[in-house]
Amino acid sequence: MRIKKYTLKFIGGKDNKIYLRYFATIEKGVGKTYDKPIDAKLKKEDLLLLNSNNLGGIVQKECNRVKEQLVNDIEMFNAKTNTYPTPDQLRTYNNAIYSVFDIDYHINQFYKSLTIKPSSITTYGYTLRQFKQYFIMNLLNYTVNEMINQTVINEFGKWLVTRRKAIDKIIKKDISKISVYNQQMILFKFLNYVAKEYNLSKINDFLSRPHSGQKYHISEKDFQRILKFKPTSLPQKEVLDMIRINRYVGLRIGEILTIDKRNIKINGVCEIEFKEHKKNRPRTVVIVDKPAVEIIKDHMVNNYNTKNSNLLFHFNDRSPFNKMLQVICKEVFKEEKVLIYKQTEYFNDYKEYFKWQAISSHAFRRFAIERNVDEFGIETARTLSGHSDYATIIKHYSDYMNANDLKKKLLKK
Image 1 (cartoon, rainbow, N blue to C red):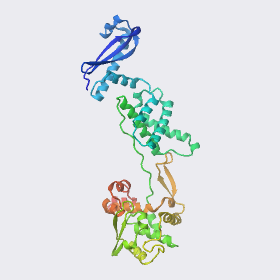
Image 2 (image 1 turned 60 degrees about the vertical axis):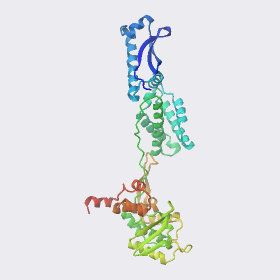
Image 3 (image 1 turned 90 degrees about the vertical axis):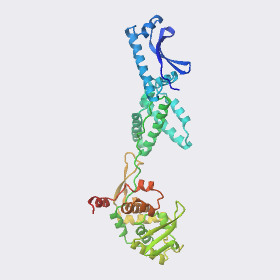
């Protein structure tokens, strides 16, 4: 029901104490009141003068100030809800604006409203315990109205960072950007729950999720340096062969390791059919690069896998493949280092790695997909790489372009 009008009147109480009475009809013929106390006393015979604004003096000024403030609160409520408040709503609303914040009560009520997994309750509990500590140290005299704003959330995030920095010598671990964001998001939900309970304006969503941690994007120059490595064993030769085959395709390492010779057709180009690990359905990949086709022919003829002659390569797991890849990369790049952004760190968000540590089988998949997106477009790139939809490939690959490719496009070469 929408309340369209209300009345305000000063009344007297016990010991001549003054109240400002708010009256509204909430149902047909049913009216209710809320009496707001005023820090002043007045004889009953003077109330008529007070209500007609003819009393004068300090009491009249104080009562007018309270009345004006209450009218502002009532009109603000109406502007937000398109109805004047019931007396009970006005009492709650006034308490929210002018009373201190009872954090334990509101946290308990918030818990009762949650419909999340038990593991998430634990996470929420940790964050709200942190916020309670921050509240006691910084916000003890805040009203509810003062609590519902972006500044409280921002300052809480800064406090989490400085607090962790202060005790870092004990725990030896930096707080992560994503951890700060997640805790701020929980506080955002908590404060908006409180805002809803008190009919206050909610905080607009303003938090930005930290960028995902970076993966190493290998350059064309470094790619060629790896290919120039002279293998001294069959495992080293196979690692280089796999890289050469995959440089224009972008297969997962698990897909390469399980290529079955019986699923390969060579007729100028090479067609490989296999069942995708993630989707459990047949898929055919076409390889047109002549050196790659020759490598596949070589493995078709020569039985490098003595345990399973049907498999193209003898590696049966990505772990030994990556270990051998790092042996090669360590020899190629030696002490060269790279900086990689990590959202798991706050202060030292760029970590330094040896280049050989940063390169894995997936670096070559990324290399191929990024180039295929640039050269042939997303549709061809995702078909070759096996992505079922556009979302993943757009998120992880389409926003990246090698510096040399970018220069060529800009210079139109």
